[in-house]
Image (cartoon, rainbow, N blue to C red; front, side, top):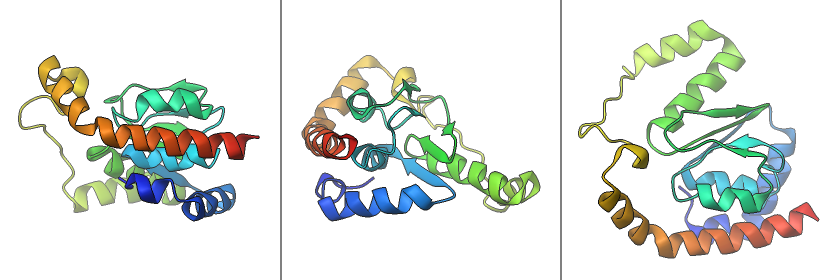
Amino acid sequence: MLAPEVQNDPEVISLVANKASSARFNIGICNGVLAFGAAGILKDRCVTASHNALPILDQLGVRETIPAGNGVAVDGNLYTAGPGVGSFEAAFLVVEAAFGRNAAQLAEVIIEYDPHPIYGMGVPSKADPALVSQFEAIMEPLVVDYRRGAVSSFRAYAM
């Protein structure tokens, strides 16, 4: 997760825009997906992100938003996912695309990737609504900062 002051920094956004345009693979995880959005990379793409970033995506030109907890969204060379296990899953898919399925499967075995949410929730859609509300209240100040920076930067890049 990028802190809002990093994600909203014009130099960071410019770097993301420049590097993403020539990168073979782009991976955005959690709220870091918003850095791609701020740089105009998400325009007309199918993406996902953390629960708190999802409502911001429609302001960043996204064509389709995949709800949290539905795995990695792949759109061309762009791989996006929510936090936690999403980073591993996006990485496995890029390894598969770059080096083949066997290499990705080998990586999965090497790190013994086998997630099981301890409390059976893992994502907000499976959690008690009171916990989700508590989570959203804790994150709201950050979400305001993420939205402000990502949307204003996207408008500058998209024009």
